[in-house]
Structure formats: C-alpha cells, structure tokens
Length: 231
Ligand code: HEM
Image (cartoon, rainbow, N blue to C red):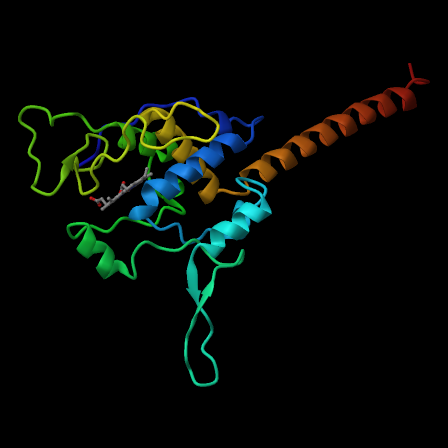
C-alpha cells in the first residue's frame, strides 16, 4: 500500500545555483545527535567529514574523543578500548540488528546515511514523515498495536513514534526549535550525509558553464574576424 504523497517543498540546497547552508547543517547534526542517534546509526559518516562543513577540527576531535572504540588486537589477541579519533565513524546506538529490534518492538531503525537517496520522495518524504503524525489516527483507521499512524509511511503503521516536538532541542544560534524547523534542518543534514559531494558537483558545473560560455564567445569573435574580408 502506498503512503500519502509527500508535499513538494522548495529546498534551497537543491537549487542548482545554491549550496548547503552550513548553519543549517550544524543545526541538523545537533538534531541527529540529540534525537535520532538514540535509535539510528549513521555508520558511513566519519568524524573527519564533519570538519569544515559542520564544525571545526578541534570540535570534531573533542566529539570523537567522547566515544570509545576497540583497538586492534595486540600480540595476545586482546582488544582494548581507546578514545575516538577523526578517522573513526560515528558510533551506532546498538551492538547489532538483534539488539536494535529488541529495543524497538521488533522493528529495525534503518541506518540514516543514505536514507535520503534510498526512500522515494527523499527530503520531501522524510520531512513529511517526521511532521506528519496526527494527534489521533483518523476515524476508522486500523492501527496495529505497537505501531503509530502516519499517513506518509507506506502501510500507514510505523514502529517509530513521533519524535519531534516544539522546543525539543536548544539551538546555539538561537533559531527557534519548532518541530518543522528541526525536521527541515535534520533532513538537510541527512541530504548532506547522503551526497556530501553535491556542493562540489554544482561548483564544478558552474565553472564548466562559465568557461564554455567564454570559449563560445571567443570562437564567435574569431570567426567574425577571420571572415571579415569575405563579403
Ligand atoms: C524509521 C528518521 C528518530 C526509531 C525511520 C525512517 C526514517 C527515520 C527516515 C524510515 C522510514 C521508512 O522506512 O520509510 C528518523 C529521524 C529521527 C528519528 C530523522 C530524528 C529526528 C527515531 C528515534 C527512534 C526511532 C528517536 C527510537 C525511539 C525508528 C524505528 C524505525 C524508524 C523503530 C522503523 C520503523 C518501521 O519500519 O516501522 N526513522 N528517526 N527513530 N525509526 Fe526513526
């Protein structure tokens, strides 16, 4: 069964002349860390990739050091704990899928690294999903116990409950943390996570366009110059 079709939103970062808003990415990462990371991993993202996009190198190092990672086995085969480094990947909330399901009524919270690309509707779908939980399921809707009604989720019964409520996080830049603001920020952040090369691609495209236009103009001038003597 199809879910309700997501509304099309005019995402700034998707326009071909625009890049990601880094203040927005920073807020979105904060939402991921403080809300989503309790259940969802982001396992393709190393701390180093946050540097320059979302935080400074010192902030990323300090964040990595907040977590412990396993060392390589030593000569006796023992594995120890060491503080995280920039080259480590963001830690997952659960040891494995079994533990994740056990904590979520049997449902598996998917890894969010590529979710924007993986789900039909991308940013529009995830924004609609996060902000689309009604107070009450509509009259006559069948909702299995342990599931939550969300019209955007295919099948409409989703194991994830509503997570975003106004004022849930406190943004350091003082942006009011409404549910929709947090949803917008975390979706833009997740789009960055899935396509970190998007800005470079657009900048390269712009250079190609400018240089091609210049070469075309020069070739037009050369042609007129060369043919000027011919009537
Ligand atoms: C599923 C996003 C927070 C538990 C999902 C899906 C997305 C998502 C995109 C996939 C829906 C689909 O399959 O189409 C987020 C975001 C969060 C967040 C952006 C933070 C703002 C949480 C939290 C929990 C959670 C805090 C646990 C308390 C789950 C579970 C599923 C899920 C169990 C699987 C649902 C199912 O298959 O029925 N989430 N989530 N999520 N999420 Fe979250």
